[in-house]
Length: 522
Image (tube, rainbow, N blue to C red; front, top):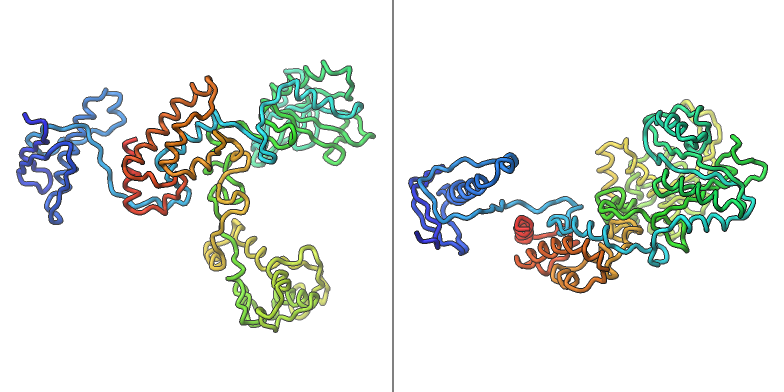
């Protein structure tokens, strides 16, 4: 038998009529012909189906439970076959969240790498940060003024929905007697009835004391206890009203301040800037833990474009403000704008293009808390000649408020989108992630910097000494191996010039097919 050929004998699948063919192995073979001549029947339904069937049958019965065994094709015999893969031709993903790195799964391994061996920095001063010990926290507490009235709290529920009926019994059995629920202190046997559909914050009162240097041992023991209960986070309620004793029911948000301490990463110069625990999910722009809160991880957002709002050749009265050009002259909105014009020295009967830039800014962005008197006359329930005070919100804030209203109809949303354009997010500048996430680096590169490299440059960086310790190398080695293999596949199919962070919906058809091929091979 000649192993250099795939030999097909008596193929009768679909419209094939007893076909015999020898196909050379280890060659690029293209099957051409008229539509309906049997190209797909030969390549996919006969040769690929038989190769896949034989491969799956060679696996264990357990593995075959998860892999569908293909039916044996109508053919007398096929020799010279190897296990095969088939890449279907599909259009590029139109999902704005998909990138080259996410499609090829490289980003999943990058997230794991940064979560395990990334070096966190303060997002404000960019100094490297480390975890704080119990002694560090005690030292910070002892720096407070002696005589300060303090209450040590251990957070057990943070912004979660539920009734939490188990809390009183569970912590009374452990010897605790007080709890702080949504900012109010209760005895555990007077635990309030909570709305299960609302989010609640619950902290157990671990200790109460007036700060004194002689209490350092007791404070240390209580802090250790609170840190264990609060999973590394404690809160110190400091009473700032001297007339209030520690433990009185009159303690409230008005006469206290809350200091938060954490065993997790924290900057000594910015202790209030809490840096979250490094997990793979934190580095995902598709998860609320890591995504920029302004653009929700898209890197861009729809914003009202002032250039689309105004028709500078028309006056306001003639409909020069396009979103409101159908508003009647005697409407509440137009009357209020006329009051603004009168107070700020411009006219609604002058073409918008002739107004000053400052006057156009007032129309677009409003006048803040400035009050305007409006008298309602004529017919109607409120038309009694009463003078009402109101403010002017501005065209752009009004449109944005309406657009973000969850109750707005799709029709109204589409109508407002006529005056919007996609702009880079001003918070993350297209990075998609929170500042605390971007402050985690490897080899002075954060995860976005890594994704901004092209495939060739990524391989070059990952081939260098990344400065890991011996323990970090043990963790990073298998992750780096997976990343290099996937990136090398992309380089092998001719995509060395592509940036890992490039949006998948900007790829050409050929690039998308080669990425799918690299992904399947990986």
